[in-house]
Amino acid sequence: MKSKSTLLSCALIAVSSLFIGCKGGPGLFVPRQEVTPVVTMTSGTTNVATVGTNVTVTITPAASQTNYVTNIVYAVNPTVDRTLSTAKQVTEFIPAPFSGIASGVLGLASIVLAFIARQKSEKAKLLPVLIQGVELANSPQVKDSINKVAIGLGLQKQLDREVQAIT
View 1 (spheres, rainbow, N blue to C red):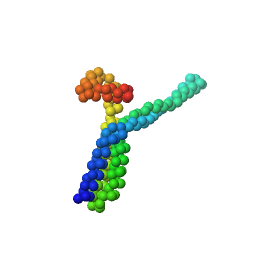
View 2: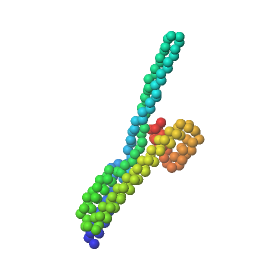
View 3: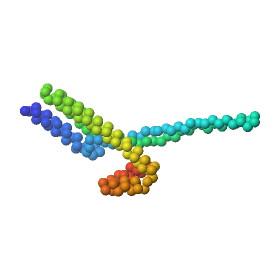
View 4: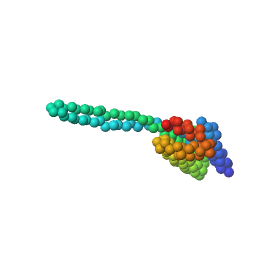
């Protein structure tokens, strides 16, 4: 009975620390910006013109332009990660039949959190693409519709910040 209460106490401490006292506020995931340089190369050209015995060769060198793409990538909150590591260490002191179960649950929790972080990151990559597409289409009706929905959901300020950051 005592081992069950110890296991329950450890589980309660681990779960509560996931939501309380996380650096940057409570939450399982933290966003971070990932800036990637994208280099665009233009090919050079060579033109040869002959007028009588004169040969004129014009060479235009290749040029490159570097643009930077910023993506928001989500990762498991470092506090959550440390809590899972600490809980893993604590499972070593739990009696035999329950330590394996506790380790398995913590391992499964780590896998699930990593999967969710990856899904959030993939969805976050779509936002710049959508904003740039709307801006390039330059359709006032589409922009008005998006604005109305953002106002209705209370996301107007957030949307404005994202659009300003991307455009």
